[in-house]
Image (cartoon, rainbow over all chains, first blue to last red; front, side, top):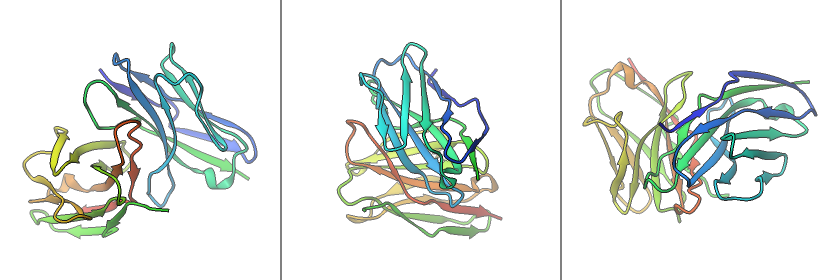
Length: 116
Length: 114
């Protein structure tokens, strides 16, 4: 069954430190995409970063990087130099490529709190 | 920067009433989606829409739900007879293609059914 697991319901990090948010996925489809979204307290979902299953390199977008370990089926988000504005809910999501589906499968999220 | 806009931001309705949630996707996007998030829970897929028809729907998207693209810009979700359990945040999203299928989300409409 296709599934996204985020095992950390909540995380704390000190401002300016790096933090890793865990995400593991389960699929037998060889073609898939992995995404991270940020949901601040205002509620909107903000796209952060994308990793394709065939991408050789780990994705990076500014302070965000995705630690993609295909054999372990993990796609952890690393936020470097945390800022107070990074405090939010973070969702990992997956889309399957070959099965003709368009939908995202979301994890349950990790609430990150950045401490001053 | 182009964005997905949703109106209203908060909708309160009585059980059994019909509601229409409205979305304006990003203008050059071709694929449209609705998701919902019950308070404190994960985001769940409802339906995807392409070329003026539903391409996929989840088991949540039963006969009380419908979607429509009435003109070139709006994309609506109608709930015919709301139930208490329909109370949730409803997100509209759009994507330009399926190559990466990065979906851009609106700010959501919070639906409260009383």
